[in-house]
Image (cartoon, rainbow, N blue to C red; front, top):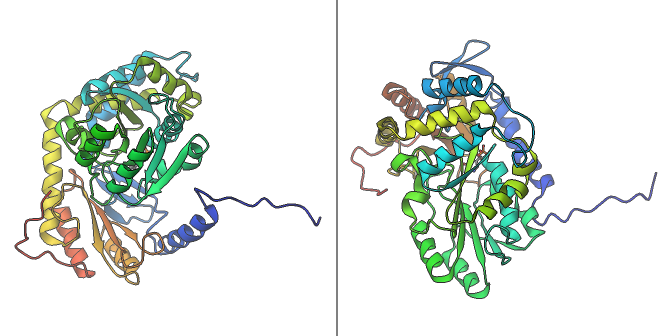
Length: 417
Ligand SMILES: *Cc1c(COP(=O)(O)O)cnc(C)c1O
């Protein structure tokens, strides 16, 4: 039929036509070169494909290898035996088994906060941010929400949801002047950003705390990349650095990276019980979708216990040793920071072939290149873990040098934290 209407998108905060077009060419090239769509079994730290190719994964975010820790595995099994049910399907606000509450109490004690669990950090942010937008988490005043330009997609995807509730704006990366200017204009301002960026930068937590003191600025951090790997008892960068640990700060973290289990935690301080109930009842999927299942809860309880022992300190040190070893061999702009991710710079035209050769030599690192990152910032992304051996790291560095990675100069200048 002719004359039928086709809706026009507004694309104010998202644009699938653009992102699929841009992103899919990246994935197609990666897969064609055997660097995506890999299927492999994990056995004692080595991955093996169906055709018998063995490789060590240097692209996994379980930085402390707690995901395969015997106590974590045992915790999952033990909880299933204790509670005798994987997931008793009913919203937790109506009926819940005590397992989830046990985990939230444990995480709350561990991180000195009220902890609310979710099946993932993405679900937590997508549920919580619209409640912040409407003033229901906060003091009832509708805020201006400032999203950091580089904030993780799990937060950026909530923009259209928040924009239906309040005014939102995107600012340049950590633009403190912009944030301060908006604080002078609006009764209430929330700033949404990552606590630790996936390429090693940290949020200006102290400077933001100063704005929190002076203007009552509220900050929503996603500290998924540093929790467990960083700080006393794995408390992460934001909560080890910020003095503003009251109702002006909310931290979301995945439990699926260095913490080594499944799910996520929302960490809040100083909010009334009523607000916690509102979150449980109205924070999107937290209210209508499945909670963490019993196996994930049991694993979480076991990982939280490990966080209370010296073993965590040992694992954090091992991780830092691996990072230092890598930095002593390969020059990256992340060199010297405490963060486990390194981007080994390569030309756009060479990065796929380099990734392929590194994979053939028995190591998986993820190539990133235009159009997924800006031209001129392509490279091989390397993630180090406590469970890598010195030998694995050294051999990887040797292969990286062979494919053109810049070697570190023998005596490195002081680069700071
Ligand atoms: C990995 C990551 C996530 C995703 O966490 P899920 O719990 O898997 O949703 C969210 N935010 C940041 C900053 C991350 O690095």
